[in-house]
Length: 342
Ligand code: TYM
Image 1: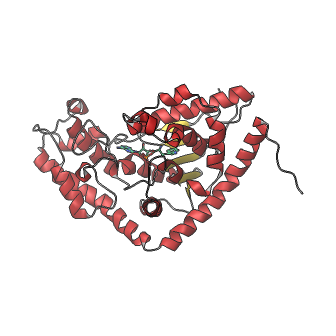
Image 2 (image 1 turned 90 degrees about the vertical axis):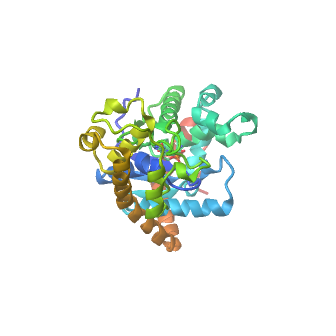
Image 3 (image 1 turned 180 degrees about the vertical axis):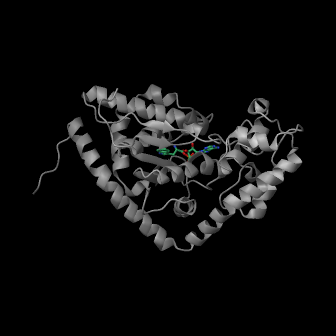
């Protein structure tokens, strides 16, 4: 266990691989905006190196990266307060990842459920990068000595691995250099489920567009998707335990609570006893009022591509002031001969 006290610093990332959706927003992005208000140094990253662990069309990747940056800003991240970067512009992420590839064990990686899900039945055909994905994620976090990482529930296992890598590095080299990062999994919607199937998480890779709300959807599309979301025939209960065996109903209530910044109990105190025919239009109005301004602002920012590129470049310069000394020290600990002044 770490004896050193590390200065609080927040890091998190989102993959620019397709549309930003409501799960990303409620599980992660909205939480980033909450952290920004706490005045802790924060770095938020478009993880383009992670995205290419599965095939990405180069033009789409560029567009998605800029769109994700537009989404970050439209949702309330201020590039003056938070550092916004794309991963490939800060080379220390990939450099530290190599060191961690040599610290992490094959068996640890084989247990990762995200790898198993994404590789599917044909794991032999998955990229080596997909297998090593969590080591790069640990490097993202630890190259800043980040102490807190806000994420949705699906990233919990990766964050436990990040702690294992930090602990093994510290132990093997007899140092107290990397912090034990805290996952921050908070709010009423840490696992937003598909609108088509309450047992599957909302995801950008779901072939059905009706299964999710994209942050680029307009007001009509958002309302229509909520109206068509799968539910059961019962009315809403007045206490959270009445949602236990009702995944679709629970999902919609969780979304309402997260969007309205209430607890599930507070929501049910208001809407308990209502039918979905009444609750869905309430949810649709709330979702449109919160999400449509973000999609409008994203579209406006996408018209200012040069400004987005400048924000990312400036972000990476600020980021490297933190990452370069940490990587230099890591190399020294590992025993790499440093360059000298010629
Ligand atoms: P990604 O791009 O899959 O998702 C980005 C964030 O959104 C959260 N999320 C959800 N939250 C609630 N409900 C959902 N249905 C849902 N779907 C996604 C994720 O938990 C995540 O917080 N490996 C990461 C990206 C990453 C990263 C990092 C995160 C790379 N390096 C370092 C934190 C720190 C990923 O694939 O996220």
